[in-house]
Length: 320
Length: 315
Image (cartoon, rainbow over all chains, first blue to last red; front, side, top):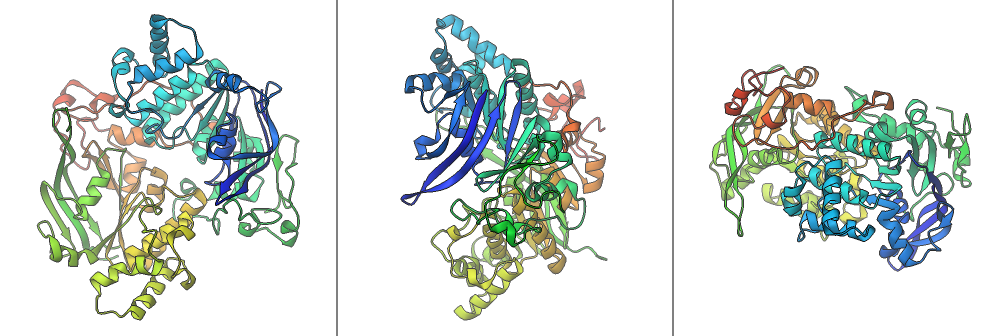
């Protein structure tokens, strides 16, 4: 189990640190996919990167909270142990397959590098391992592929190579940050099928970071909807689609164009606020049709709604 | 609309790029092949297809931002195929472009009033500075932005507001046609709907024609009247949006539609093919390598469209 407990993160903006994620708690379980959904700037990628303590390289500070891997704090481990955890226990798949591979090394040398990092295999066994990893992600002609450089591969092929590299250390958990956003729709579908089959076959716990409800519908077991640095709704995937409870979740569901064949699309007035511009009390209140003065009076807590598994951060939950 | 007025017509466009380069064999890559369409006043024509299919190249050819190898481009009554320099620039008032990335397409050092007003300097040079400012304010208002933004800089805006500025900048010279290259794909979902509504409102008010380039089929289905599906530089299918989306005839169109994201978790399918499948055939039907219905004679098919479909065995 990989748990985030009451995590608050701040980012450097012009000399000071501004809160970007506040008091966030979620847990990843083996064999389950948790989707972290939200629009740009809501803190979902920061949260995902914090699971590998990657944000520190960009000056992100942990203000409060903890991250526990099987009960052990990731903030207490040595840097040597942390290196083993990265890729060996928790792996990451990034959004941009175009930039995540090094253009001056062959695919083979980049895949082999990861294998050598996580195993003691000799040269020829490592190569066999590389070929079988590539085959696992649907790349059949591995021998030829290993000689090639990234620029001769399509976006979908590169994403497959990156997925193969993420699997090289046989991780228990995968963090996938918008894994299909940069790909063509027809390629997306197959990458989704691939991720689903790998995740299911190996019983991986997955954190899926996305703004795309189509991807959520395809892959998630549970969904945490984020807005302005905090979770506003947490529920099973069917509950999120069948009975979204927070006004923000409802509004997001409504403004998808596939639901409106003709006429005007439903909109959410205003814009997503940046960290530092969050409203007092309920942070969604300025854009919410249901908001009253009480909503902005004090911070709203994330509370169980209906049965205990469905949580929403809203004083007027259930009203419409 | 009772009578159709053509505002943008292209016929038999062809464009090839020279590939290769340093230490590699130079070879020609056909980006757009024998492409024709006619866009009427008040209409939206969408071009869909995956990256590398030639949809952005088509837009740039229609804008005359790229030189064509063959074919014709007609803006309203003006054949602009061979125009260049000042004469072409004067005609540009007819057709304007809105880009995908509102962050990259605005000059960070220019105030909004100057960015949006720039087109007026070229197309209406007799206006005084004050007159220009008034006209900019009016156009911004049409796009949902108040006069208080005139003296601000792009970094003070959100993505959605910047796209409104991008649309205002295109509209200021009162064009007949807007070419929109992925205008909402960089925006948050909640803001995307605002911009799509704005585009539909402007079209209804001004009778604008849109050439709308997108990879998002849900957006296209919502906004377009007609659609062209491109694959590897060829138009594989075209027609009215409802016909093409409800009854796709080309296997590629069907594959694209089948790949649309599902709307609810209960639509999940069981075991699916996970193998890589991205090739483009260099001879015959370009889609043949990926087509589940391909037969031997597809390898020599010249991809000529018949009744709006370029396929030997339409569905």
